[in-house]
Length: 385
Image 1: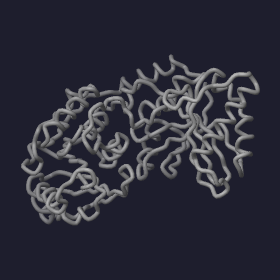
Image 2 (image 1 turned 180 degrees about the vertical axis):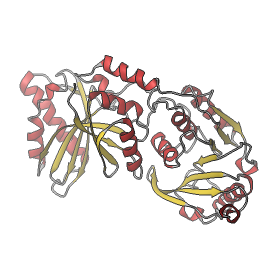
Image 3 (image 1 turned 120 degrees about the vertical axis):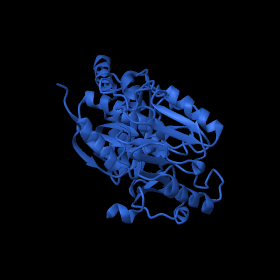
Image 4 (image 1 turned 90 degrees about the vertical axis):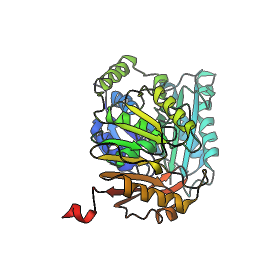
């Protein structure tokens, strides 16, 4: 049996506990949430499974060395001592990403990346008389150097490209939501396929696709063309295929409806194209409808989840737009839990409804809130009675 080892899954601010729960449900051991990351223990097969199945992870890192360094020269020396031939061929290629949070190191992350590159290149040149190439786009291995104060952790990036690049999205609207954030919002809302799902401002369809994949238990990254670990020296293709097949056996057909609206014909077309790319056309319906002129057509509970314009990239009249959101939910969508994310805190004052939850998140560089409004059948007072 393959030995277990510690790994680190990185994520977005506010999704740490969601990712920790995902890892536990997937079978990870010793799961610990940190800042924009979750550490866990598993074997090689679990690393493959984590890359395929996790919805809120950005990268899965496998630490290979940890040591103390107080300056760039010590860093170079200790990096050069690592037996790099265990991970990389002398005629192979690599890329380095560095993150530095330290008062000891006065250099920026870019310089640390260059210093780390020199150590690896000099290791191969001194030992084999030849050196691997630096390839930022399609390297054989991606190396992550993280310096926290005087502790340096060197990891291999098993994901390759960021895991938010699911492989289904070719068309986007002017303000697309990151796929990892979209999945996180769906999971934070509690949606698991047990209610109908509606995105009334669906744009290019990302929230719909992530919701459908959750309802159908489809692995998040099943459509990706490749992962970083497929170029590793110890890559086990038969093990990967076995895990791939076992995850696909869990797929089920969603029982309830998943629907998207958008008033722009161009957005509806983009959403349908992306949904088709994700092989989910039979599970998701998209209509050209203005949410503000719509009403609830679905029987039973509905989860409404959307990413309305913030006024950042799409120019709108914030007060009237957000007042319309509140009025439409209140008057036309009884028996629903409505969630949306916004970075415009002022806009929330115009909704005219009391949020039952406000979850701090970040959407790209924007500080945001994910808010929940509970729409009851009849008045709230009557519901309680």
